Image (cartoon, rainbow, N blue to C red; front, top):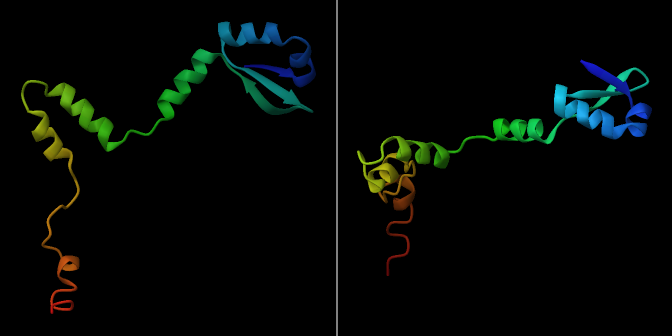
Length: 101
């Protein structure tokens, strides 16, 4: 783990940027406390892609790729459609008879 004081990073930023690209993160300290990290763009991009939450649409797309030619797109849509589109629910009958003429 490479830790350097903030004043040194300020004076030698290109050097520490190369270090971050070649050997990994450079930790930046102020008064012996770590206050920051210098990382390469590649490491940053990798962290972002891992932290992205997967959605139901991502799962459906993955399932679609894995079952290409075996299941139609319409069937995949039906499998991943978790909404209840039926009108036969309690809420659909709440006002029955209320607004009849």
